[in-house]
Length: 131
Image (cartoon, rainbow, N blue to C red; front, side, top):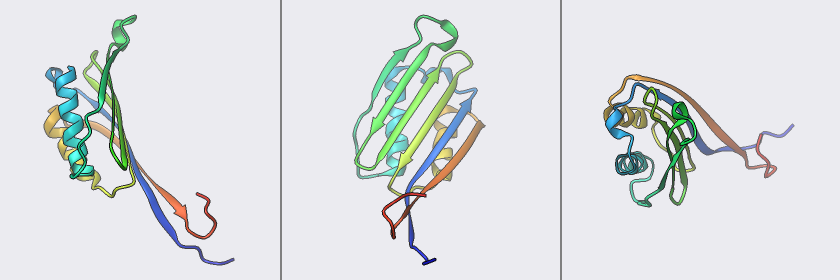
């Protein structure tokens, strides 16, 4: 079997964040949060995302949904008002330091309570297929 070169295709993070500052749960602040995260991942790109309310049929699931994309990255999140929780997903082909993203989360959302999972997606240069 031949050794094949593998490259990192993207860095993906799934971050569950708890006990966030309730003052962040509005469209303006969520867009500001998305820009702050985006500047860490791709400082030269500036594209404002969409923020839409969700869950008006059930109060425990009420909040805001964020979709923010730029050239190489996608940021999505659900900001759940009850319990002040955020479920954040980051996917980027541009390299970034997860520790810097976590620092921004702690500062902007004013919390220390989060759980982060990271996945490195590899691309096999030999066959054109991912493993």
